[in-house]
Structure formats: structure tokens, C-alpha cells
Length: 65
Image (cartoon, rainbow, N blue to C red; front, top):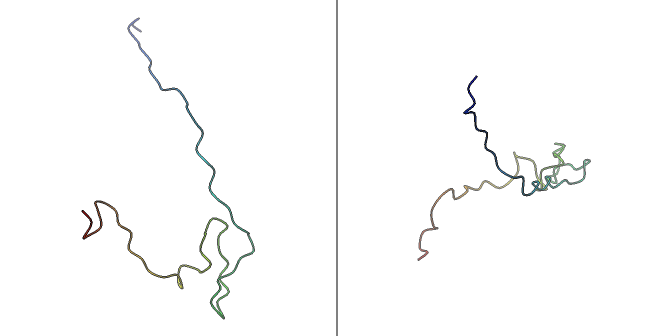
């Protein structure tokens, strides 16, 4: 092995925040739906009953200057 080996790295600045948790015994709020919600799901409805939204992935919203 040669003596020209160089290691580099970065300093650990901060530890990321842990994910928010909610109660573990939550159920979808739609009547007759018994789907158990994940403790990481912040919504009060399951995926089937949640409102459908399309996220804006890039750029500015239309009409914004």
C-alpha cells in the first residue's frame, strides 16, 4: 500500500429531528371504516378516504410573480 492515502469527511453538525408520532389506537373517522391509522399518519382519515391532492414538486404556482 502506498503512503498517499488521504481520507476526508465532514463534521456532524446536528442530529435530524425524530418523526412526529400520534396516538397508536386511532381509527379512520369515516363511519363504518375500521382502518387503523399509523402512528406516523397525521391525518384523521385513511388513504382510501383522504382528500386527493397533487403536490407541487417544482417551480412557482401559476399566477405568482
